[in-house]
Image (tube, rainbow, N blue to C red):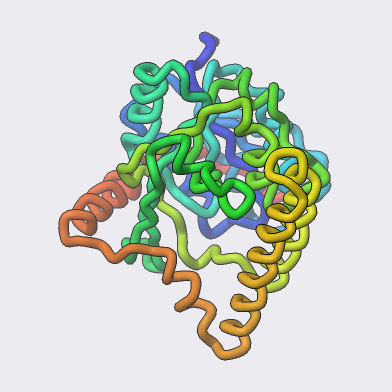
Length: 299
């Protein structure tokens, strides 16, 4: 088998309702020189059977170990196994726009100094209809100007050279918010960029729970105090840690008042009719794409 240019990695855990559409979006890509690596993180639903059923030589299901090692470990596993020159991130809850890989590869080819490129996103509801979008800044300086507050790049949308991912492995002590730890640690020696066009389709219903959000806040503030003092000083690090805890308090308050959805959606932009038409066209293309499947027995 020839070496693919792009490896797409999808770790999954109990994603039987969304995994096939995530895979479908890879088969819908206008760029076809890819391999897809699937890795199960100890699912207890039908996700593994869906992954096993895909019948295409470009798709590899890594051997199952039955453990729930969490995302950081599985991403490192994918990055080690990847045969492509580039690696594209992808969550099992979401879908990629059919032109995503072509546009990201074109961008990286014309911006040789950029290490990692993400994209803006359309937000989808449970009916797989576009509702809003998240627009991210294009330039590295803007993306990371307040990196101890937030790095403005969507983790699941990124593509980078495999050698970059292997130079900067995920910290497996961070079971969640691993992307923020990675950006804090790597961006002083890396260039990040975004494509302003929404090329990633993110499911709104996969929103973070309150308990996960609070755990993530704790981990991020620990990382701020670990890496911040040497870059921005101790007092500024405390300031950014304080901002994180203030946001967590607001999140808790909005949850108790039943307003969490409104708080989350405040980060999103409304869709113009042109945006809505483009998003619907992309979704239609994905949903019409056939994935070769074989019948298998449940195990």
